[in-house]
Image (cartoon, rainbow, N blue to C red; front, side, top):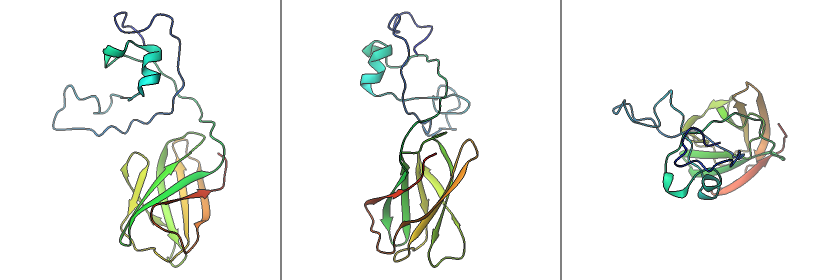
Length: 169
């Protein structure tokens, strides 16, 4: 909800429920006035949601928020992009805590799990050639829960497609 800004907050607007991430890139070369530097938190709202709680022209408003469990149904979706030597996987439809803190990938011909690194938001990357192998994922969310999604994509998977990891958080 918009708080403590009578000029821009819509009176008695109440609260909105959104899906949000705080992966605005920090700029440590500009330590003052950067919204994205820790410990500050920054949320970009869509225009329809923003205008439910604040006047359009406001631009930046102070908000009060609390975290609630995400009630998504179905499994996590894994959208695979990249090329044979670099794989980028976007995870979405993540329920429960909602924010992914760690991802590992395993090809059917690899020895164990391979660590992926965060690229941006919920995009995770690895510089390995896993083409022609079925892919499994191990996903950890911020409440510490780790789930394995075996054989999400069979050995004929293709770049540009999404695959469904069947599981409910």
